[in-house]
Image (cartoon, rainbow, N blue to C red; front, side, top):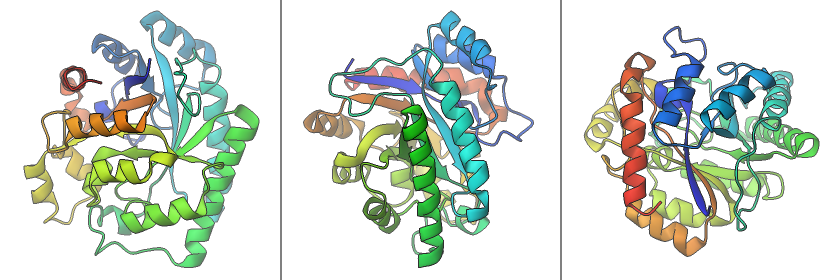
Length: 307
């Protein structure tokens, strides 16, 4: 293994665990296996049970492993610290007790990771993809968010040996180029790495290839998505939440969109990147009947592109 390609429950529309239309987690595990993947993310907190024996059996019976757990929550509010640390404890206790992912000699940190994303702010959700319209945090609020991130990363590392990777996410308070630059300055490499996402990078107005290149020294984990440019151009002209745009098909199977994956393959080869890449394609869970075909299309395309 030098690069291993995995996938995630968001391809089945699993983002908000309160959504009554989510598919059963066992079905997602089945279809990850059916599509030819060996590994996957755990998905948002509360989707897969926190039962080590149950989840271990489900993974082993399908030949799967978990590459990462996810904190997808309000990182801004200092009053949310207790909740964030509880989720960190429970997720890390689970993922470190499950079948271990493989590791490459050149991989900087062993998986599983804890991917950390800010979410839950209407004023940013409706401004996703619009750096000129999105409100920014003042210094005190930004410092509060950095304190929460450091607390999560320190707990994951010191108690469980899990590397936290911060994921800039459309509709959160870490999305745009200026925010990623500030994050890189305020959270040093020894505290946490980055999980950069090609789709969110493009959505935020950046070049995915150049962004991966710029933060190569922080790049511990990567998410791959692709963007339907016609849908993207349309939703950028609407007042729309990020996941509403996803429900309209702004994310598409990899290879069917506008992101230059052959160029990304060349870049990652030049950088000597080794480790994991997770395929994602957010959608409305009511359309999860097409997920298996789409994640297989993405996997087959990436194989053809040298991944």
